[in-house]
Structure formats: structure tokens, C-alpha cells
Amino acid sequence: MQKLLQILRKNARLSAEEIAVMMGTTPEETEAKIQELERKGVIRGYTAVIDDTAFDDDSVLALIELRVTPQSQSGFDEIAATIASYDEVESVRLMSGGYDILVSVTGKNIREISQFVNQRLAAIDAVQSTTTHFVLKSYKENGIIKTDAEKDERGMIF
Amino acid sequence: MMDYDKLISRTAVDIKPSGIRRFFDIAAEMDDVISLGVGEPDFKTPWRIRKTAIDALEKGRTTYTANAGLAELREQCARYFERTIHTKYDPKSEVVITVGGSEAIDLAVRALVNPGDEVLCVEPSFVCYAPLVRLVGGVPVVIETKAEDEFRLTAASLKEKLTDKTKLLFLPFPNNPTGAVMRREDLEQIAEVLRGTDVFVVSDEIYSELTYSGKHVSIAEIEGMRERTIVINGFSKSFAMTGWRLGFAAGPEPVLKQMLKLHQYQIMCAPTVSQFAAVTALKHCNDDVAAMREEYDMRRRFVVDGFNKLGLDCFTPQGAFYVFPCIRSTGLSSEEFCEKLIYSKRVAVVPGNAFGECGEGFVRVSYAYSIAHLKEALVRIGEFVKELRYEQHNP
Image (cartoon, rainbow over all chains, first blue to last red; front, side, top):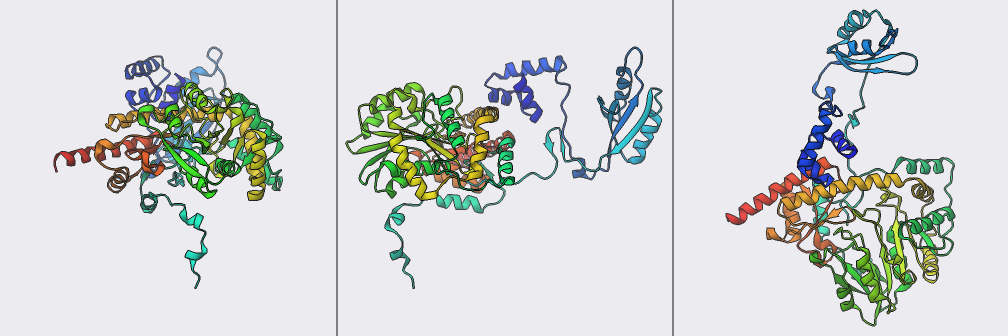
């Protein structure tokens, strides 16, 4: 399982047949395992890692720290789930340390994000405060380095 | 005017440059080539090892070490041999740290071979053995291994080449370029032939950590063989440390003593910073080695399967990071195949005859590359083979 996930994490576009060869199993077995992982919710989806800057996208990524008053029944879960349901939101995490929830959000521009913070996040009663950080440049995401690839300096050798 | 023909040593001139140098030159000059030609890992040296070297530099630990190498490193090497090939060596008198496995090979030849002695060289193999033997006036005698034996050395082919002049056998397994390994039962048979003779063995085990589906076995651990074997290993392949130039050798004291003496005159000691780093490698980096091996193993299956599907028969290698597919079905020689492939598809593989005449009909493909890289290369080789077959049927 661990190995299969490791392979998919690196390249989700390999076929079940190719993965089977790499792992020394059959395509059927691999396909069944992948389906099981999907059914169990271990694999939640497949996505492309896109370098936005490579096609002149001007979108803005912001990380927003929230201090939140926990609710008597659900603690932070209900509020986190509400925030997670917003389309603009990419990730929501409960954190240890100086604040409670970290939200990452993409928007077309700074104005759009400030509107989102103002109207949607700050509007939630339990949210006591917000601190918004705009991302200036991204160097690595999901384990993939986004700067130019290093040149292979190895030469032909016996 | 200087007459360089007169100047230069005849011994040096008589050592032939590799016949496929021309192909390497073509490959080196071409841009955007997808290479499958390297002979070294694509992984970076594990960080802990690099950090140790940085610390050594910061502390200015940059003097010579003892000629034989740092005492702690020799101790670790002895433990390594005990752990992996169950053979004990005295770190004080039976281990030497060298500049790569290459220097150890040279030292062993110089310490053992007299002019006129015959030295058995298994081929296909890495290219340095025969030239080093010639340098000391020895006579290299080639033993060819065959695809039908999975490129293992057999007792029968060994016996065939033994004479009363035979001094030494080079045993280069796991093998570059074939990926062949010698299992315990294969080595038992070789040992059976050698035990009653005065033939000594130099076992080049530089790829030992890259052995798949089974553990590496050394001839030194077969009964009666420790006393007649020098084992050579190194850090280049197992720890992805090619550029650090560090190897080690172990064997019976009378031979090691001579090797150490020559080592003193040749190079004093192996690079000090590399030696400090290597202590960390042997002490703490077993998991890194295992992770790299696992990754190579996946690529190995991927590439073998790829070539077999293209109709280029490829036996499943059990070691190193090369596959050695047969290209005879294309009707081309190894060099023709490689040259056409690089010109038409910009993929570089190494002609099999670079590793000895019996490598003709094969090419060496390194899988020290990412799966994505290998996949792209296989697609291109597939197109190439298809076009070749089309041309053959529609001349």
C-alpha cells in the first residue's frame, strides 16, 4: 500500500499496468488496490501541479491565520468545515501555536482576497481575528520543485 | 622539435584506447539528448554524509590521514564486511582505504602480477581490468559470459582458460554492464575449481548493495576462499558518492601489506574529507541505501518490461543499475544501433562491445534516471525499432 501511494504521489498518471510492472504484481491486482484506496477515501482525488507563473496567471495566493472561539459541542470542527466549503479555499488546517486555523485561499487579485476575508471569514461570529499573508513566490509545492530543473551534469561513462 | 613518438612510453602507447570513443564523442557534442548512458547514481549523496563533510571542512580537518586511511573508517569497513559478507578482517592490517574502487583494482594487480602471468578477465565487464594488467606486463585472458547463462561465470568456462601461468581471476559481480550476479551456488562451483590451485581472486563488488531479490554473496565467504581473495568495494554506487572518490579493499595481510606500500608511494592517502563523510555513511545511512535500492528495483522492472515489449530481448538483471538488451533482431551491430538511435531519436545508450567483444549484439542501458525520463526514452526507442522494422520489410 505504502509503496503504491508513494508511486502515485510522485506521478498519478502512470497506468495500472505500468505500476504493476514496477511493483512486480499484476495490473488487475493494482487496479483493485487503487479502487480500494479510492473507496476507503485514502485517495481523495488526482490533481495536476501547475506553475501559475508559467502561463502569466496573475492569481494571488494568501495564507490566513484565524483565531477562533471553540464551540461547546464541536470545538473547531464545525467552523473549519464551514470554511472548507467555500470554493475559494484551497486548504484548511487546525494548528498548534499562536493561532487556531490556517486557511489558504487563491483569488484573482488582492482585492478579491480582501473581500473574501472581510465578508466571509471575519463575518463568522466565532472568528476573533484574522492575519493575512500574501505569497510572493513559490519554490516547491507537493514535493515538486517549481524553479528551473537542475541540469543533469553526469556524462556518458563506462 | 620534440619527437613525441620517441618520447612517449611504449607501454602507454600499446594500451589501446576504447574503440567506441568515437560514439562517445558524438553523444557528447549533441544537444537535447535523452541519455541512458551514465554509469553513476542520479541520487544526491544523502544529506547526513554531506553535512559531515561540511563540518570537517569548517573545523579545518584537512590534513593527510594515516596511509591506510582513518582508523575509525577502517574499523567501520571491517564491520561492514562482517555484517554483509560474514568475513572478518583486521582493520589494522587487512583493510586499506583507496581513491575509489579503481585504485584498489590497480593496487591488487601491481601487488600480485609478475610479467608473463595470466590474468582471467570476465567479459563483458567494466573496462579497466585488462589495461591495468598490461601495464605490469601481465597477459589478460578473456573469459566470455553468455546471455544463456544469464552472464554468470560458469565453472566450465573458467576451467577452460586455466593454465599453469594463471595468477589471478577478476570477478566483477554484480556486473557492469550486464547486471548479472553470482548466487551462492554459482560461487561454490567457482570456488571448487580454484581451491586446489594457486590462483588468487580479486572480487570487485562495487555494486554489491544494488542486488535485487536476494542478498549479495561474496566469494570471500565461501569455504577456503578468504585466504585467496581480495574484496573490493566502495562508496560510489551504494551511497551515491561517485565524485568523492573513495573505495576500500580487504584481504589477507601479506597481500594487503604490499598494496598499502604501493598506495603510500602512489597517493599517500585517500581524500580526508571524503573519509570523514564515509564514516557517517557506514554508521548511519543504511536506510538511505535501502531506499535507493528500492527505487532502482522499480525502475529495473519497468525498463526490462519495456525492452521485452519492444521485442528487444532483455534478461532480467539481478544487480547494478543496467539492463543489457539484445539488439540482434534489428540486424544492426551494436555501434550502428547506437549511432542511428542517437541521430534519429536523440537517445543515447552505450554499445555493448565497449565492454568486450562478446558484448557485440547488445547495448547497455542505465536506469539511474527517473521513471518519467525512462518512459520517454522507451517511447522513442520504440518508435526507432518500429521504423527500422518497417524499413527492413519495405526496402
